[in-house]
Amino acid sequence: MRAADISGDLDRVLVTEEEIHAKLRELAAQVEKDYEGKKLLLVGVLKGAVMVMADFMRCLNREVVMDWMAVSSYGSSTKSSGVVQIRKDLDTDLGGYHVLIVEDIIDSGLTLSWLLSNFASRGAESIEVLALLRKPDAAKVEIDCRYLGFDIPNEFVVGYGLDYAEHYRNLRDVAVLAPHVYA
Ligand code: 5GP
Ligand code: MG
Ligand code: MG
Image (cartoon, rainbow, N blue to C red; front, top):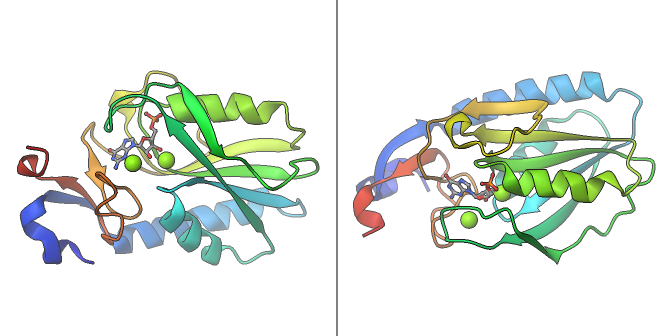
């Protein structure tokens, strides 16, 4: 759905679908160059990264494989605690692969920080991060993100895979929710 279909629920659109697609094409060109001749595995973090993964992967003009992890972070629905539990682990042995973790958003950074240390002992050739969005003002730990889409203000956003209580993932753009939706 488009922002116009649910304009009453939204405060404002931050990043449009067109801007996202243009950025993903740019990032894909960089990744093609950086990983030339290397075995590349994309690891998506469910569920928020499904749209980024699907669109980014199709921008890549090279052979690539993907896998998924599902993790849950304890804490309230809008704040991450950094205490992470694996709900679904990888199917792939990381040995021999250059791993690119594909994430929807870096907020506190706690989830990715945990994932990066979890991956560190799994035998990958290298591990890097691609994130569509980042909130610089929310960082609790610094994440070295090699491929970044957009820095955004420290507000709760939905759309393009990102949910509020499992809703709004199918919104094509990234938008800030209107305050009355929380009330
Ligand atoms: P972090 O551990 O960096 O604080 O964020 C962990 C996860 O929380 C993100 O991967 C994302 O799924 C979710 N999250 C963080 N910020 C937002 C946001 O503004 N909107 C939505 N819908 N989810 C968010
Ligand atoms: Mg995520
Ligand atoms: Mg969520």
